[in-house]
Amino acid sequence: MTTKVIFVSGGVISGIGKGVATSSIALLLKSRGFRVTTIKADPYLNVDAGTLNPIEHGEVFVLDDGMECDQDLGNYERFLNQNLNATNYMTTGQIFKTVIEKERALGFEGKTVEFFQDPPREIIKRIYNCAKVNNAEIVLFEIGGTVGEYQNLLFLEANRLLKLNHPRDILHVHLTYLPIPSSIGEMKSKPAQMSILQLAQSGIHADVVLARSQVAVDDKRKEKIAISCGLNPEDIISAPDVESIYQVPLNFENQELSGQILKKLNTRPRKSDLADWKVMVNRILTAKKTARIAMVGKYFSTGDFTLTDAYLSVIESIRHAAAHFDFKPKLRWVDSEQIEKSGAGILKGFDGIIVPGGFGARAVEGIVEAVKFARENNVPYFGLCYGMQQAAIDFARNVLGYKDANTTEINPNTQHPVIDVMENQKEKIKNRNLGGTMRLGSWDFKAKKGTIVAKAYGKIEGSERHRHRYEFNDKYKKEFEKNGMIVSATSKEGNLVEAMEIQDHPFFVGVQFHPELKSRPLHPHPLYMAFMEAVSKQKRK
Image 1 (tube, rainbow, N blue to C red):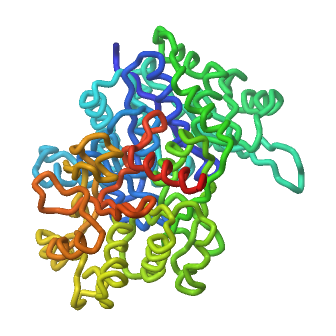
Image 2: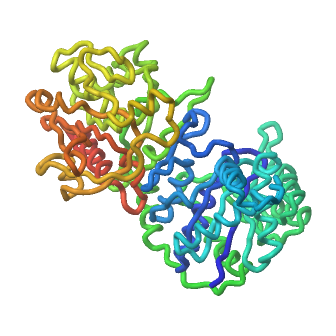
Image 3: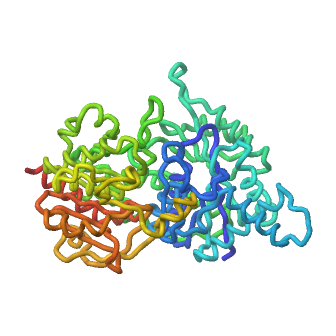
Protein backbone atom coordinates (compact mmCIF):
# COMPACT_ATOMS: atom_id res chain seq x y z
CA MET A 1 0.00 0.00 0.00
CA THR A 2 1.33 3.45 -0.96
CA THR A 3 1.76 5.72 2.06
CA LYS A 4 -1.29 7.93 2.52
CA VAL A 5 -1.04 11.35 4.19
CA ILE A 6 -3.96 13.22 5.75
CA PHE A 7 -3.33 16.87 6.62
CA VAL A 8 -5.47 18.47 9.33
CA SER A 9 -5.80 22.25 9.65
CA GLY A 10 -7.95 24.58 11.72
CA GLY A 11 -9.75 27.84 11.07
CA VAL A 12 -11.66 30.75 12.64
CA ILE A 13 -10.21 30.44 16.18
CA SER A 14 -7.55 28.43 17.95
CA GLY A 15 -8.30 25.84 20.60
CA ILE A 16 -11.26 24.19 18.87
CA GLY A 17 -9.80 20.70 19.06
CA LYS A 18 -7.53 19.91 16.09
CA GLY A 19 -5.55 17.54 18.28
CA VAL A 20 -8.61 15.62 19.42
CA ALA A 21 -9.96 15.55 15.84
CA THR A 22 -6.64 14.24 14.51
CA SER A 23 -6.47 11.65 17.29
CA SER A 24 -10.06 10.57 16.60
CA ILE A 25 -9.49 10.08 12.87
CA ALA A 26 -6.30 8.16 13.65
CA LEU A 27 -8.21 5.88 16.03
CA LEU A 28 -10.97 5.26 13.46
CA LEU A 29 -8.48 4.29 10.77
CA LYS A 30 -6.55 2.07 13.18
CA SER A 31 -9.82 0.41 14.25
CA ARG A 32 -10.30 -0.51 10.58
CA GLY A 33 -7.04 -2.45 10.55
CA PHE A 34 -4.62 0.14 9.13
CA ARG A 35 -1.19 0.91 10.57
CA VAL A 36 -1.48 4.57 11.54
CA THR A 37 0.78 7.23 12.98
CA THR A 38 0.48 10.98 13.60
CA ILE A 39 2.66 14.07 13.36
CA LYS A 40 2.20 17.43 15.06
CA ALA A 41 3.80 20.38 13.24
CA ASP A 42 4.13 23.48 15.41
CA PRO A 43 4.80 26.74 13.55
CA TYR A 44 6.98 28.41 16.17
CA LEU A 45 10.77 28.82 15.91
CA ASN A 46 11.49 26.92 19.13
CA VAL A 47 13.33 23.68 18.43
CA ASP A 48 11.09 21.85 20.90
CA ALA A 49 8.39 22.64 23.47
CA GLY A 50 10.69 22.28 26.47
CA THR A 51 11.46 25.98 26.88
CA LEU A 52 7.86 27.18 26.47
CA ASN A 53 5.78 28.66 29.29
CA PRO A 54 3.01 26.15 30.15
CA ILE A 55 0.54 28.97 30.80
CA GLU A 56 1.09 30.27 27.27
CA HIS A 57 1.41 26.97 25.44
CA GLY A 58 0.03 24.24 27.68
CA GLU A 59 1.61 21.05 28.95
CA VAL A 60 4.99 19.86 27.72
CA PHE A 61 4.52 16.20 26.80
CA VAL A 62 7.57 13.91 26.95
CA LEU A 63 8.04 10.80 24.82
CA ASP A 64 10.01 7.65 25.66
CA ASP A 65 13.01 8.87 23.68
CA GLY A 66 13.08 12.16 25.62
CA MET A 67 11.53 14.42 22.98
CA GLU A 68 9.79 17.39 24.66
CA CYS A 69 6.78 18.12 22.51
CA ASP A 70 3.31 19.57 22.23
CA GLN A 71 0.45 18.29 24.40
CA ASP A 72 -1.32 16.98 21.29
CA LEU A 73 1.20 14.11 21.22
CA GLY A 74 -0.39 13.03 24.50
CA ASN A 75 -3.81 12.83 22.86
CA TYR A 76 -2.32 10.91 19.94
CA GLU A 77 -0.81 8.32 22.27
CA ARG A 78 -3.95 8.04 24.39
CA PHE A 79 -6.29 7.54 21.43
CA LEU A 80 -3.97 5.29 19.40
CA ASN A 81 -2.78 3.38 22.47
CA GLN A 82 0.76 3.31 21.08
CA ASN A 83 4.04 5.02 21.91
CA LEU A 84 5.35 7.72 19.58
CA ASN A 85 8.86 9.08 19.06
CA ALA A 86 10.78 12.15 17.90
CA THR A 87 9.78 11.60 14.26
CA ASN A 88 6.17 12.32 15.25
CA TYR A 89 6.89 15.95 16.09
CA MET A 90 8.36 18.88 14.22
CA THR A 91 8.61 22.65 14.55
CA THR A 92 9.54 25.40 12.13
CA GLY A 93 12.63 25.85 14.29
CA GLN A 94 13.67 22.24 13.66
CA ILE A 95 13.10 22.62 9.93
CA PHE A 96 15.11 25.84 9.64
CA LYS A 97 17.87 24.42 11.85
CA THR A 98 18.23 21.35 9.63
CA VAL A 99 18.18 23.37 6.39
CA ILE A 100 20.77 25.86 7.68
CA GLU A 101 23.04 23.11 9.03
CA LYS A 102 22.84 21.39 5.63
CA GLU A 103 23.75 24.65 3.90
CA ARG A 104 26.73 25.19 6.25
CA ALA A 105 27.96 21.70 5.36
CA LEU A 106 27.66 22.48 1.62
CA GLY A 107 24.79 20.04 1.38
CA PHE A 108 23.14 22.18 -1.31
CA GLU A 109 26.34 22.11 -3.40
CA GLY A 110 26.43 25.83 -3.99
CA LYS A 111 22.78 26.24 -4.96
CA THR A 112 20.71 29.07 -3.50
CA VAL A 113 18.68 27.95 -0.48
CA GLU A 114 15.13 29.13 -1.17
CA PHE A 115 12.79 30.07 1.68
CA PHE A 116 9.61 28.74 0.08
CA GLN A 117 11.10 25.65 -1.60
CA ASP A 118 13.66 23.99 0.64
CA PRO A 119 11.85 23.99 4.02
CA PRO A 120 8.73 22.33 2.50
CA ARG A 121 11.01 19.68 0.94
CA GLU A 122 12.48 19.01 4.39
CA ILE A 123 8.95 18.74 5.82
CA ILE A 124 7.97 16.20 3.16
CA LYS A 125 11.14 14.23 3.80
CA ARG A 126 10.28 14.06 7.51
CA ILE A 127 6.71 12.91 6.81
CA TYR A 128 7.88 9.86 4.87
CA ASN A 129 10.66 9.16 7.35
CA CYS A 130 8.05 9.13 10.12
CA ALA A 131 5.97 6.66 8.13
CA LYS A 132 9.03 4.44 7.68
CA VAL A 133 10.17 4.57 11.32
CA ASN A 134 6.66 3.84 12.60
CA ASN A 135 5.83 1.30 9.87
CA ALA A 136 2.69 3.28 9.06
CA GLU A 137 0.40 2.97 6.05
CA ILE A 138 -1.40 6.23 6.91
CA VAL A 139 0.14 9.39 8.41
CA LEU A 140 -2.03 12.11 9.94
CA PHE A 141 -0.28 15.47 9.90
CA GLU A 142 -1.73 18.15 12.18
CA ILE A 143 -0.76 21.69 11.19
CA GLY A 144 -0.47 23.92 14.25
CA GLY A 145 -1.98 27.38 14.35
CA THR A 146 -4.91 28.73 12.38
CA VAL A 147 -5.33 29.05 8.61
CA GLY A 148 -4.61 32.62 7.56
CA GLU A 149 -1.57 33.01 9.81
CA TYR A 150 1.76 33.56 8.10
CA GLN A 151 3.81 31.17 10.22
CA ASN A 152 2.21 27.88 9.14
CA LEU A 153 2.39 28.56 5.38
CA LEU A 154 5.43 26.30 4.93
CA PHE A 155 3.46 23.28 6.18
CA LEU A 156 0.54 24.16 3.93
CA GLU A 157 2.97 24.48 1.02
CA ALA A 158 4.28 20.97 1.77
CA ASN A 159 0.65 19.81 1.62
CA ARG A 160 0.13 21.57 -1.74
CA LEU A 161 3.26 20.07 -3.28
CA LEU A 162 2.39 16.56 -2.14
CA LYS A 163 -1.16 16.83 -3.44
CA LEU A 164 0.20 18.07 -6.77
CA ASN A 165 2.50 15.07 -7.14
CA HIS A 166 0.39 12.37 -5.41
CA PRO A 167 -3.27 13.38 -5.86
CA ARG A 168 -4.65 9.92 -4.99
CA ASP A 169 -2.68 9.64 -1.76
CA ILE A 170 -3.11 13.04 -0.09
CA LEU A 171 -6.20 14.32 1.74
CA HIS A 172 -6.95 17.55 3.60
CA VAL A 173 -9.33 17.73 6.57
CA HIS A 174 -10.23 21.24 7.75
CA LEU A 175 -11.62 21.86 11.23
CA THR A 176 -13.60 25.08 11.44
CA TYR A 177 -15.99 26.76 13.86
CA LEU A 178 -19.61 27.90 13.63
CA PRO A 179 -20.45 30.35 16.44
CA ILE A 180 -23.89 30.99 17.92
CA PRO A 181 -23.80 34.67 19.02
CA SER A 182 -26.03 35.12 22.07
CA SER A 183 -27.41 38.39 20.72
CA ILE A 184 -28.57 36.59 17.55
CA GLY A 185 -29.39 33.10 18.75
CA GLU A 186 -28.62 31.54 15.39
CA MET A 187 -25.68 29.43 14.24
CA LYS A 188 -23.62 31.42 11.74
CA SER A 189 -21.67 29.67 8.98
CA LYS A 190 -19.92 32.68 7.42
CA PRO A 191 -16.72 32.44 9.57
CA ALA A 192 -16.42 28.76 8.61
CA GLN A 193 -16.88 29.56 4.93
CA MET A 194 -14.19 32.26 5.11
CA SER A 195 -11.65 29.93 6.77
CA ILE A 196 -12.21 27.31 4.04
CA LEU A 197 -11.70 30.01 1.40
CA GLN A 198 -8.53 31.18 3.18
CA LEU A 199 -7.26 27.62 2.93
CA ALA A 200 -8.04 27.69 -0.80
CA GLN A 201 -5.91 30.83 -1.14
CA SER A 202 -2.97 28.67 -0.05
CA GLY A 203 -3.66 26.39 -3.02
CA ILE A 204 -5.46 23.71 -0.98
CA HIS A 205 -9.03 22.54 -1.45
CA ALA A 206 -10.50 20.95 1.69
CA ASP A 207 -11.68 17.38 1.06
CA VAL A 208 -13.55 17.05 4.37
CA VAL A 209 -14.76 19.76 6.76
CA LEU A 210 -15.28 19.11 10.45
CA ALA A 211 -17.82 21.68 11.61
CA ARG A 212 -17.28 22.48 15.29
CA SER A 213 -20.01 24.17 17.30
CA GLN A 214 -21.81 24.08 20.64
CA VAL A 215 -24.54 21.90 19.13
CA ALA A 216 -24.85 19.66 16.08
CA VAL A 217 -24.65 21.50 12.75
CA ASP A 218 -27.94 21.25 10.86
CA ASP A 219 -28.46 20.43 7.18
CA LYS A 220 -29.14 24.07 6.27
CA ARG A 221 -25.72 25.18 7.53
CA LYS A 222 -24.02 22.19 5.88
CA GLU A 223 -25.65 23.12 2.58
CA LYS A 224 -24.48 26.74 2.88
CA ILE A 225 -20.89 25.67 3.49
CA ALA A 226 -21.01 23.08 0.68
CA ILE A 227 -22.36 25.52 -1.91
CA SER A 228 -19.99 28.37 -1.04
CA CYS A 229 -16.88 26.18 -0.87
CA GLY A 230 -17.42 23.64 -3.67
CA LEU A 231 -18.08 20.64 -1.43
CA ASN A 232 -20.77 18.00 -1.15
CA PRO A 233 -23.02 18.20 1.93
CA GLU A 234 -21.82 14.74 3.03
CA ASP A 235 -18.27 16.17 3.16
CA ILE A 236 -19.38 18.36 6.09
CA ILE A 237 -19.13 16.42 9.36
CA SER A 238 -20.89 17.82 12.42
CA ALA A 239 -18.61 18.06 15.48
CA PRO A 240 -20.64 19.38 18.43
CA ASP A 241 -19.42 19.83 22.00
CA VAL A 242 -19.50 16.56 23.96
CA GLU A 243 -19.21 15.60 27.62
CA SER A 244 -16.07 13.52 27.05
CA ILE A 245 -13.47 13.91 24.30
CA TYR A 246 -13.55 10.12 23.93
CA GLN A 247 -17.04 10.45 22.40
CA VAL A 248 -15.62 12.36 19.42
CA PRO A 249 -14.49 9.36 17.30
CA LEU A 250 -17.83 7.64 17.88
CA ASN A 251 -19.66 10.77 16.74
CA PHE A 252 -17.48 10.92 13.62
CA GLU A 253 -18.03 7.26 12.84
CA ASN A 254 -21.80 7.63 13.23
CA GLN A 255 -21.47 9.95 10.21
CA GLU A 256 -19.32 7.38 8.38
CA LEU A 257 -16.23 9.58 8.39
CA SER A 258 -13.64 6.79 8.11
CA GLY A 259 -15.45 5.30 5.11
CA GLN A 260 -15.49 8.67 3.35
CA ILE A 261 -11.80 9.22 4.01
CA LEU A 262 -10.80 5.79 2.74
CA LYS A 263 -12.93 6.26 -0.37
CA LYS A 264 -11.29 9.63 -1.10
CA LEU A 265 -7.87 8.01 -0.61
CA ASN A 266 -8.77 5.27 -3.08
CA THR A 267 -8.29 2.66 -0.38
CA ARG A 268 -10.42 -0.41 0.16
CA PRO A 269 -12.13 -0.23 3.57
CA ARG A 270 -11.63 -2.91 6.17
CA LYS A 271 -13.92 -4.05 8.99
CA SER A 272 -14.22 -1.66 11.92
CA ASP A 273 -13.80 -2.69 15.58
CA LEU A 274 -14.55 -0.07 18.24
CA ALA A 275 -16.11 -2.42 20.83
CA ASP A 276 -13.58 -1.77 23.63
CA TRP A 277 -13.70 1.98 22.98
CA LYS A 278 -17.51 2.03 23.26
CA VAL A 279 -17.39 0.15 26.58
CA MET A 280 -14.84 2.64 27.94
CA VAL A 281 -16.88 5.68 26.84
CA ASN A 282 -20.04 4.23 28.35
CA ARG A 283 -18.23 3.65 31.65
CA ILE A 284 -17.11 7.30 31.75
CA LEU A 285 -20.55 8.68 30.87
CA THR A 286 -22.57 6.49 33.24
CA ALA A 287 -20.40 6.84 36.38
CA LYS A 288 -22.75 7.64 39.25
CA LYS A 289 -20.56 8.82 42.13
CA THR A 290 -18.49 11.98 42.45
CA ALA A 291 -15.06 12.54 43.99
CA ARG A 292 -13.71 16.01 44.74
CA ILE A 293 -10.04 16.22 43.78
CA ALA A 294 -7.92 19.31 44.47
CA MET A 295 -5.21 20.01 41.91
CA VAL A 296 -2.76 22.28 43.73
CA GLY A 297 -0.38 24.08 41.39
CA LYS A 298 0.76 27.42 40.06
CA TYR A 299 0.13 27.28 36.31
CA PHE A 300 -3.62 27.83 36.32
CA SER A 301 -4.28 31.52 35.87
CA THR A 302 -3.89 33.97 33.01
CA GLY A 303 -5.56 37.27 33.78
CA ASP A 304 -9.16 36.60 34.83
CA PHE A 305 -9.22 33.14 33.24
CA THR A 306 -8.34 29.71 34.60
CA LEU A 307 -6.41 27.36 32.29
CA THR A 308 -6.12 23.61 32.67
CA ASP A 309 -3.95 22.74 29.67
CA ALA A 310 -0.76 22.97 31.73
CA TYR A 311 -1.78 19.71 33.43
CA LEU A 312 -3.79 18.06 30.67
CA SER A 313 -2.29 14.57 31.02
CA VAL A 314 -2.83 14.58 34.79
CA ILE A 315 -6.48 15.50 34.33
CA GLU A 316 -7.04 12.78 31.74
CA SER A 317 -5.25 10.19 33.88
CA ILE A 318 -7.58 10.95 36.80
CA ARG A 319 -10.58 10.54 34.50
CA HIS A 320 -9.23 7.25 33.11
CA ALA A 321 -8.89 5.76 36.60
CA ALA A 322 -11.98 7.33 38.21
CA ALA A 323 -14.37 5.68 35.76
CA HIS A 324 -13.20 2.24 36.90
CA PHE A 325 -14.45 3.05 40.40
CA ASP A 326 -17.75 4.49 39.11
CA PHE A 327 -16.61 8.08 39.78
CA LYS A 328 -16.95 11.27 37.83
CA PRO A 329 -14.11 13.35 39.28
CA LYS A 330 -14.94 16.93 40.23
CA LEU A 331 -11.60 18.65 39.75
CA ARG A 332 -10.89 22.01 41.32
CA TRP A 333 -7.83 24.04 40.44
CA VAL A 334 -6.36 25.42 43.65
CA ASP A 335 -3.72 28.05 43.03
CA SER A 336 -0.96 27.67 45.62
CA GLU A 337 -0.77 31.46 45.87
CA GLN A 338 -4.31 31.36 47.30
CA ILE A 339 -3.17 28.88 49.96
CA GLU A 340 -0.36 31.25 50.92
CA LYS A 341 -2.93 34.03 51.35
CA SER A 342 -5.82 32.14 52.94
CA GLY A 343 -4.24 29.04 54.47
CA ALA A 344 -4.60 25.32 53.76
CA GLY A 345 -8.07 25.30 55.28
CA ILE A 346 -9.46 25.91 51.80
CA LEU A 347 -8.59 22.26 51.08
CA LYS A 348 -11.16 20.94 53.59
CA GLY A 349 -13.83 18.76 52.00
CA PHE A 350 -11.68 17.36 49.21
CA ASP A 351 -11.46 13.59 48.78
CA GLY A 352 -7.94 13.67 47.36
CA ILE A 353 -5.09 16.11 46.68
CA ILE A 354 -2.66 16.05 43.75
CA VAL A 355 0.40 18.25 43.33
CA PRO A 356 1.63 18.00 39.74
CA GLY A 357 4.97 18.97 38.20
CA GLY A 358 6.43 22.45 38.20
CA PHE A 359 9.54 24.59 38.44
CA GLY A 360 10.79 27.61 40.34
CA ALA A 361 10.14 29.41 43.63
CA ARG A 362 6.87 31.24 42.98
CA ALA A 363 4.05 30.17 45.34
CA VAL A 364 5.99 27.11 46.49
CA GLU A 365 5.20 27.63 50.20
CA GLY A 366 1.51 27.19 49.40
CA ILE A 367 2.33 23.80 47.91
CA VAL A 368 4.26 22.76 51.03
CA GLU A 369 1.25 23.76 53.15
CA ALA A 370 -1.03 21.65 50.94
CA VAL A 371 1.25 18.63 51.38
CA LYS A 372 1.27 19.10 55.15
CA PHE A 373 -2.53 19.35 55.19
CA ALA A 374 -2.90 16.07 53.28
CA ARG A 375 -0.35 14.28 55.46
CA GLU A 376 -1.83 15.41 58.79
CA ASN A 377 -5.49 14.99 57.81
CA ASN A 378 -5.23 11.57 56.14
CA VAL A 379 -6.34 12.91 52.77
CA PRO A 380 -5.08 10.73 49.89
CA TYR A 381 -2.10 12.56 48.40
CA PHE A 382 -0.31 12.00 45.09
CA GLY A 383 2.82 14.06 44.35
CA LEU A 384 4.15 14.11 40.81
CA CYS A 385 7.81 15.10 40.31
CA TYR A 386 7.74 18.57 41.91
CA GLY A 387 4.96 17.19 44.10
CA MET A 388 7.29 14.49 45.44
CA GLN A 389 10.04 17.02 46.05
CA GLN A 390 7.73 19.31 48.04
CA ALA A 391 6.50 16.29 50.02
CA ALA A 392 10.11 15.62 50.99
CA ILE A 393 10.56 19.25 52.03
CA ASP A 394 7.39 19.16 54.16
CA PHE A 395 8.56 15.94 55.85
CA ALA A 396 12.05 17.33 56.52
CA ARG A 397 10.67 20.56 57.99
CA ASN A 398 7.63 19.37 59.90
CA VAL A 399 8.55 15.82 60.95
CA LEU A 400 12.36 15.85 61.12
CA GLY A 401 12.46 19.45 62.41
CA TYR A 402 14.79 20.91 59.76
CA LYS A 403 12.99 24.22 59.46
CA ASP A 404 15.14 25.57 56.61
CA ALA A 405 14.99 22.33 54.57
CA ASN A 406 14.54 23.10 50.90
CA THR A 407 15.52 22.34 47.34
CA THR A 408 18.63 24.05 46.03
CA GLU A 409 16.54 25.10 43.04
CA ILE A 410 14.84 27.58 45.38
CA ASN A 411 17.44 28.13 48.13
CA PRO A 412 20.99 27.26 47.05
CA ASN A 413 22.22 28.10 50.57
CA THR A 414 19.89 25.89 52.59
CA GLN A 415 21.54 23.95 55.42
CA HIS A 416 19.41 20.92 54.57
CA PRO A 417 19.22 20.40 50.79
CA VAL A 418 16.86 17.42 50.81
CA ILE A 419 16.38 18.06 47.09
CA ASP A 420 19.52 18.86 45.15
CA VAL A 421 20.57 19.33 41.55
CA MET A 422 21.84 16.25 39.76
CA GLU A 423 25.64 16.26 39.56
CA ASN A 424 25.72 16.09 35.76
CA GLN A 425 23.37 19.10 35.58
CA LYS A 426 25.55 21.60 37.46
CA GLU A 427 27.78 22.46 34.51
CA LYS A 428 24.75 22.75 32.21
CA ILE A 429 23.06 25.22 34.55
CA LYS A 430 26.27 27.20 34.93
CA ASN A 431 26.65 27.54 31.15
CA ARG A 432 22.91 28.10 30.53
CA ASN A 433 22.83 24.92 28.44
CA LEU A 434 19.20 24.36 29.36
CA GLY A 435 17.21 23.33 26.27
CA GLY A 436 16.65 19.57 26.06
CA THR A 437 19.24 18.80 28.75
CA MET A 438 17.13 17.68 31.71
CA ARG A 439 16.73 14.05 32.74
CA LEU A 440 14.28 13.20 29.98
CA GLY A 441 12.40 10.24 28.59
CA SER A 442 11.85 6.71 29.80
CA TRP A 443 14.05 5.33 32.61
CA ASP A 444 13.87 1.91 34.27
CA PHE A 445 13.00 1.64 37.97
CA LYS A 446 12.78 -1.07 40.60
CA ALA A 447 10.23 -0.99 43.41
CA LYS A 448 10.53 -2.32 46.97
CA LYS A 449 8.37 -5.38 47.65
CA GLY A 450 5.33 -4.77 49.82
CA THR A 451 5.10 -1.04 49.12
CA ILE A 452 2.07 0.78 47.75
CA VAL A 453 4.03 1.38 44.55
CA ALA A 454 4.96 -2.29 44.05
CA LYS A 455 1.41 -3.43 44.80
CA ALA A 456 -0.03 -0.92 42.33
CA TYR A 457 2.19 -2.14 39.47
CA GLY A 458 1.87 -5.79 40.45
CA LYS A 459 5.60 -6.11 39.84
CA ILE A 460 8.86 -4.61 41.06
CA GLU A 461 10.33 -3.44 37.75
CA GLY A 462 9.13 -1.05 35.08
CA SER A 463 9.91 2.19 33.25
CA GLU A 464 8.48 5.70 33.45
CA ARG A 465 9.08 9.05 31.77
CA HIS A 466 10.98 11.88 33.42
CA ARG A 467 11.49 15.63 33.04
CA HIS A 468 13.54 17.26 35.80
CA ARG A 469 17.00 18.42 36.93
CA TYR A 470 16.71 17.95 40.70
CA GLU A 471 16.62 14.74 42.76
CA PHE A 472 16.09 13.60 46.33
CA ASN A 473 19.36 13.91 48.27
CA ASP A 474 20.29 10.32 49.12
CA LYS A 475 22.15 11.25 52.29
CA TYR A 476 18.79 11.91 54.01
CA LYS A 477 17.35 8.53 53.04
CA LYS A 478 18.05 6.66 56.31
CA GLU A 479 16.65 9.45 58.47
CA PHE A 480 13.51 9.72 56.35
CA GLU A 481 12.90 5.96 56.51
CA LYS A 482 13.56 5.80 60.27
CA ASN A 483 10.82 8.41 60.78
CA GLY A 484 8.15 6.92 58.54
CA MET A 485 8.70 7.98 54.92
CA ILE A 486 10.25 5.13 52.96
CA VAL A 487 11.88 5.03 49.57
CA SER A 488 9.57 2.69 47.66
CA ALA A 489 11.34 2.77 44.27
CA THR A 490 14.76 3.68 42.92
CA SER A 491 16.42 3.80 39.53
CA LYS A 492 17.53 0.42 38.23
CA GLU A 493 21.07 1.06 39.47
CA GLY A 494 19.72 2.10 42.89
CA ASN A 495 21.39 5.51 42.98
CA LEU A 496 18.35 7.74 42.34
CA VAL A 497 15.11 7.88 44.33
CA GLU A 498 12.08 7.34 42.10
CA ALA A 499 9.25 7.09 44.66
CA MET A 500 8.59 7.77 48.34
CA GLU A 501 5.60 6.92 50.50
CA ILE A 502 4.16 6.95 54.02
CA GLN A 503 2.64 3.55 54.73
CA ASP A 504 0.48 4.36 57.78
CA HIS A 505 -1.58 6.76 55.68
CA PRO A 506 -4.57 6.06 53.38
CA PHE A 507 -2.41 7.03 50.41
CA PHE A 508 0.63 9.28 50.53
CA VAL A 509 2.86 8.68 47.52
CA GLY A 510 5.31 10.91 45.69
CA VAL A 511 7.02 9.90 42.45
CA GLN A 512 9.91 11.61 40.69
CA PHE A 513 8.59 10.60 37.28
CA HIS A 514 5.39 11.49 35.40
CA PRO A 515 3.07 8.45 35.33
CA GLU A 516 0.36 10.49 33.58
CA LEU A 517 2.44 10.42 30.40
CA LYS A 518 1.73 6.69 30.04
CA SER A 519 -1.92 6.53 31.08
CA ARG A 520 -4.42 5.52 28.38
CA PRO A 521 -8.24 5.51 28.47
CA LEU A 522 -8.28 1.78 27.71
CA HIS A 523 -5.40 1.14 30.13
CA PRO A 524 -5.39 3.57 33.11
CA HIS A 525 -2.07 3.98 34.86
CA PRO A 526 -1.72 1.68 37.90
CA LEU A 527 -0.64 4.48 40.26
CA TYR A 528 -3.65 6.62 39.33
CA MET A 529 -5.79 3.53 39.84
CA ALA A 530 -4.28 3.05 43.31
CA PHE A 531 -4.88 6.74 44.13
CA MET A 532 -8.53 6.59 43.03
CA GLU A 533 -9.02 3.32 44.93
CA ALA A 534 -7.77 5.07 48.08
CA VAL A 535 -10.12 7.98 47.40
CA SER A 536 -13.00 5.51 47.03
CA LYS A 537 -12.16 3.81 50.33
CA GLN A 538 -11.91 7.13 52.16
CA LYS A 539 -15.30 8.21 50.84
CA ARG A 540 -16.86 4.96 52.09
CA LYS A 541 -15.44 5.65 55.54
